[in-house]
Length: 384
Ligand SMILES: Cc1ncc(COP(=O)(O)O)c(C=O)c1O
Image 1 (cartoon, rainbow, N blue to C red):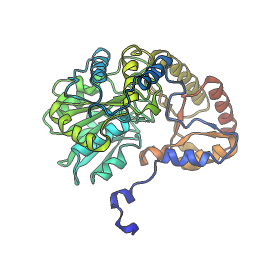
Image 2 (cartoon, protein in one colour; image 1 turned 90 degrees about the horizontal axis):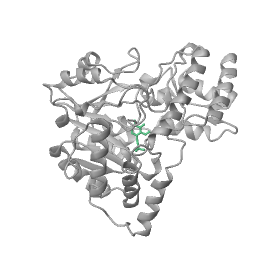
Image 3 (spheres, rainbow, N blue to C red; image 1 turned 120 degrees about the vertical axis):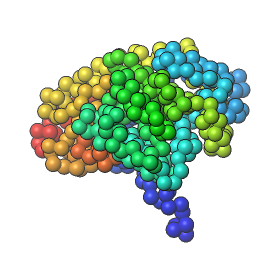
Image 4 (cartoon, rainbow, N blue to C red; image 1 turned 30 degrees about the horizontal axis):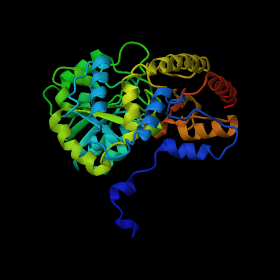
């Protein structure tokens, strides 16, 4: 019967991050720098709001698009922070994590035969959904441009079939952020083109220098852009599963149908916790960001001292050094480091073929853990 399973499903693979994570779990005394989530607990007042929601019996289905108070809070949050303008009644959907927001976006706009442009190396959550839609991912190589997409590179990859461009900044796995200037150039390139942009801004609260900019704020772009955000990374709420999707009304009206038949609504209890996060806790990410930046500076300096080529990140909580000089595949390098030094990082190949030759180091760990991991890594690199 296996041959009767949807060919697109058979064709996709479990994420390389997860595969490596499972492999590492078999080894003892390993310091793992593989995780893609904050190491801080969800802020206490947010947890309390979740508990209160249960006590108040907020445990039934909500509006498909999410509770109106949360959509209002989300509109006001992105307006104040990033200058985005969305109507909470018709232009916002509360999703089950950013992941489900990505899923319903692609399923609303893609058709077999269409293409989606992705700057690689890139977060591995896009390609499988694109393929499930029968569409084709088209990678733009950003290895020579400090992992940044630019209008010139983009233009070379646009075809008649291009339906969507993904702008995943701040980036997982590289920590790169796109400047407003560059976003302007991209917006100008897209001015006369009927192409959607999916701007995944899940790390928007974790930009170290300068302000986060969204392409949806630029002239003519709102009507073509779907902004993905949420509270997973900003408020250390990955398990609560609350994402936010922002887009023009004509599109959100269609997307809401996909969302409705997919999950009905996001978890009611988590929605109340997210409401607290985006209102009273609107600046909760600040103290975490200060710590991420300190840790980033530390690990970055250590990598530079070890002679590794690495682009200094400006956001998120990852570093993506090149390990090409060791003449090992990123998988073999990472496995060897687990076996011989007891430090786990994610092979770059998990982030599209363009990630080969790199590894992703997450610094969402305490300084003590990072220090120990870097000492072990230093000793390991001397041996290979
Ligand atoms: C770039 C990017 N987008 C989306 C997600 C998914 O976020 P969520 O946990 O809210 O589904 C992640 C998670 O690692 C991510 O790194």
